[in-house]
Image 1 (cartoon, one colour):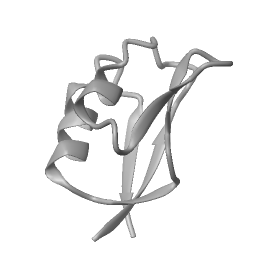
Image 2 (tube, rainbow, N blue to C red):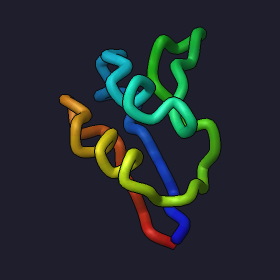
Image 3 (cartoon, rainbow, N blue to C red):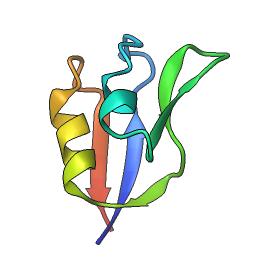
Length: 65
């Protein structure tokens, strides 16, 4: 199953939790110093769901496609 991943960069505190948990989906944008998905549409998996759940600002959203 595929998901659309979005990050509310206004609320992102640059903690890198999502990047550590799920580096195949998230990276840090060096210009903004905020997390961003590598792609808008990704395969949903347990690692991705854990990254969303562990985000301290709850700024990552998944939309099942």
